[in-house]
Length: 159
Image (cartoon, one colour):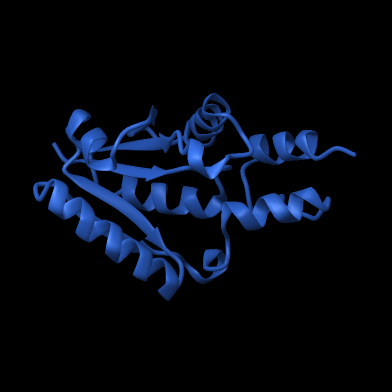
């Protein structure tokens, strides 16, 4: 059985994340979406909120589960018996960062492979930080995030 980990901070989860998760779910028997605590990043939403959003947004995928983690990525991957980490790539700047992270992760645990899924054109610009920025100015985000996230952002930024 092939199990993959799709990790991220998901602050909040976007339709770009869901595209990567959905495509990975077609390639692997089981997908674990790992929601990183990432306290150093100062997330807008709590870990519990981000996990809840991810669970609601991925409920339609039969082979996807969502778990929080607060450890090194390779430690979490080994703990859940995932032998592949799946990452989405949007632009060359993503590649440079992810290339460094992959090298570090390989050094820590060479049994865990990293696989990249390129974003389709409609999501190449999309990031959680852009979504938060647009939402903070009451901009249109309905096509960028799942409905549960849109509602939470509207509530968070209500003036």
